[in-house]
Image 1 (cartoon, rainbow, N blue to C red):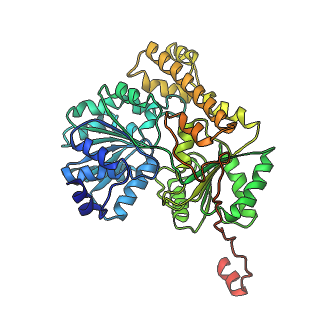
Image 2: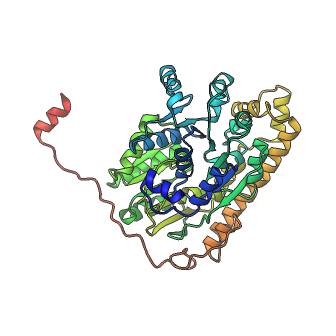
Image 3: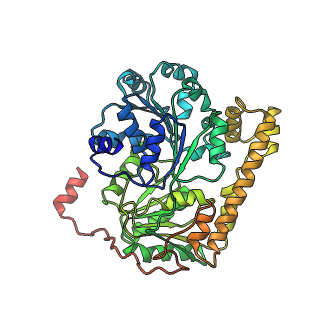
Length: 457
């Protein structure tokens, strides 16, 4: 039955790994936590059950840019019964979206938006067939970079006790299932596929300086194919992009301070291979469905294996050989420590918040949301555990960098997963297939006198 529905609605004859079991679990009415590798078609796991049940699905997503990308992709494939509503819209855009709710089959909202009581009331009488918590690993990312409203999501799910919940993510640590059960106060069936991507070779390049990294990149991108270069900040993003452009390559930049229109333009240019090199912060990647990315370079490493696996998983979605290369110099350890725990909410922060004393504004905002649901004692325990988890994740990344045996095995050990890869595994085991896909330099030519006049007038 499921394969018949898959053929009818999507034109596919076979499911990808893990999809069929997830969909069947949802159709059986079970709360399900699905962990599928990046690029394995997680969206189909809620789209097909929605078409089969013909009831609206509510998709709660932590990122507005991801939400907009998903809506755009569905509309490109002909689905008109899809709507998104979030705080980034104008008042008139939100009013139009609300008018479309009654006919919508797929409804995308952010946690911050739907948890506002006057918005939540609009959804309470809808005959939902499924609630999706997208990128659900955000539930476990307590702290500075956490979406705190996700921790209050039971205010939504409590209104739909008999509607199954589907949590989806590409990476998860051992405590994600207990976290989602704690937040929703419901039990979940865990269905997890192998997160290893054997077509992506792994390597670490030891560097002596910042400029050493730049020089290596300028030499490597000549034959790296479509490439993402991940950096830690907007400042570094702009600097590297300028140097790449000055060396003759068209390149795009992507960071959180860009407008939606700017981010969308860069994404589209990258998808169409008009631009083949992107320099980006971790804001880039979710929802960017480009199958032929050949190289992911980390100018600065992620501070956790979960983030690193998510980012390198954007390479090789077409199944072809690709590569993930991390550049590392000794000074980077201080940066990794800062990224991992530098903005951690501490017991002192919680005490200052309780005493209504001035603390960092962003920490204050997070605690203001969480204190609606959790006691001071519970918050202290949560952030104490979170600090320990972040330290453990950082230690594992440092072990990955300094590994003397198989890097892939070291990375996947964090997720309690074994490794089956044999060929093109990592720089320690040996890489027999090197990426050699030419990136053309931009064409320089003299313009005519008439063309110069046109640019002036």
